[in-house]
Length: 392
Image (cartoon, rainbow, N blue to C red; front, side):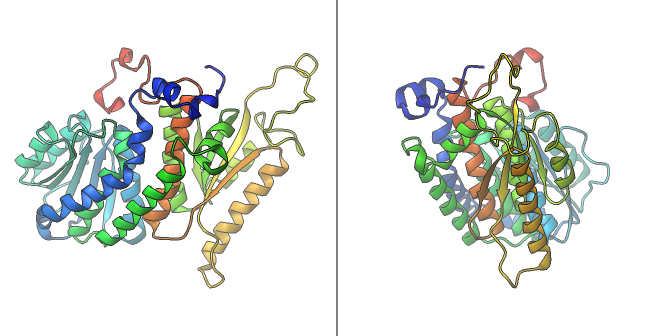
């Protein structure tokens, strides 16, 4: 991989020569995608989702870039929803799915093998079907066969990685319509505003000192990242960021969520990828002699995504979460590991999630561009003869 060249990020001509699909512009349109979904939902017959009744359970079939929609729905339903949610878009439709259940199949192209197959099987079993993806596609046809609801996504986005919020907004509004969760359009309007704010902060012509996404990309260019979320919301953002770094920037990254991942992260802090205690925290040491000290290997970096500091009257579990995250950060710093910490601003779960996800999305694109890598393509993937789910 070519060394990171930060000048590529500031030169529009050179940047566009690398980011040929203009993923930066696509991510900047996330807020507009949410508003489009709100408008579409108002014009759609969402009252027909699951026959207007709360389903017994919900199964989500999504793969590739659309799979992040599953994790967002899992976050929302597990925290406040009264029904069971399962997610698997590549295997067979679970055997328990029947006429009382809702299957949500998502594919931007409408052609991903797993979601289309599961939607067709759900129709055969008499289950309720909701599909999200391209119009006039096999997925839309499966919804029609099931007498279900299809929410179309236009061809303008191009990549499922950049279509996340348009897909999320459609799914959230549809599932709210059948009383599984209760998220009103006003909440999604606030999410759109938050996404617009982040797009303005992370825009390509914003200098480094006011552009956290460029700074994060520069920092990550010299580190092997562990992305850690300090709770359920930040944990979903951590999972998405890890996937984006791998798929978009070709940078392997692991992820975890506190408190469950505290032990494995702390264990890594004393391993071969950590710096010496009291070291430079991942920064380059000008006194290192590569001939005497040997070549330096990849250094661990901790990307810590955090929720706002809890108020004094907050639930004790929130204070425990905050204190655990701070302890891990302190331990990492004392172990010579660079800590890249980002705190979301207050708001609804979806607003905070949108803020943290936008940071990771833009940083991953900047990281790819800085290394001279086209963020929209993965050379050699087509040679593996993978099923369509791998490239969706």
